[in-house]
Image 1: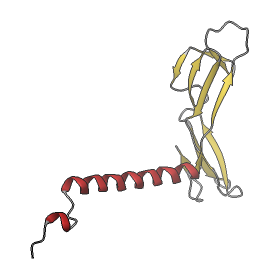
Image 2: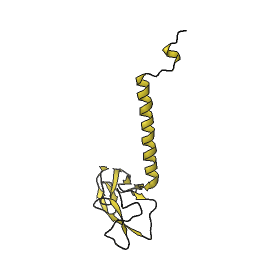
Image 3: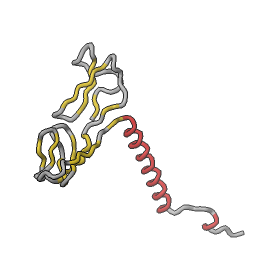
Image 4: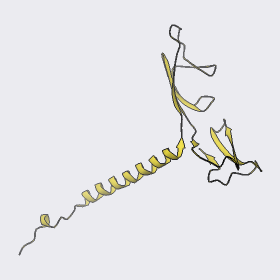
Length: 133
């Protein structure tokens, strides 16, 4: 009795590599998805007042030029176009922390929240989050 390779379901090395790559990509998506649900970022669109001449986009009293803004003074990444400005925060805020034991401090220079002990603000909070990028 002769047995042919096509009957044995033998996978070629290329097929194995594709299957492995797909599994790795799926694992990456699951990891990123869970990170997104644990933290909260903010995006918004600000519409400009109709009828005004546009020289850029105004946000919090500061005029930004048209185009991409890598970082505003308040830690947002924005795109300024005629008529609107779309921005997303460069920082994340975790959905939960121990509000009785921890206090939250925002560092504008680093665009980062720090969680410090209320009793000793020189120490990071032990609730699992001492800083969030």
